[in-house]
Image (cartoon, rainbow, N blue to C red; front, side, top):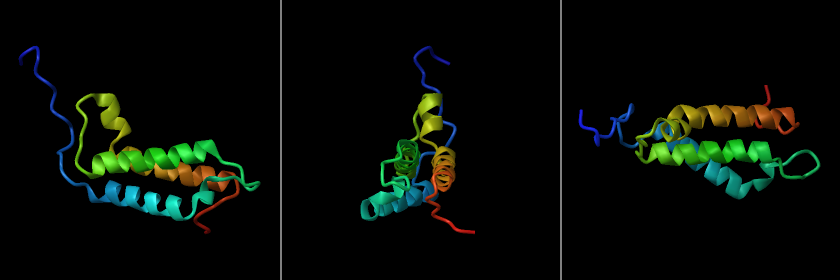
Length: 103
């Protein structure tokens, strides 16, 4: 292997439906209902917003087929990171009294 050769990405490039769907869903929901990422008093909940928008960003990056070469952005913008951030945001919203899913 040559010294200037770049490593191969672990995932194949191409459209990924699940993360792209997650990103589009978060985009629409947060545009129509931005109050979802607030606490009971109506103040912005920054951890919940950060997790939602990380999930959306990772979903768009991976969903359109971009796979970074470096391991850190490849992991941060992977389909798994998109799903994990979405699940963590749902846990955070439930913890602050704003559950999106009632069981």
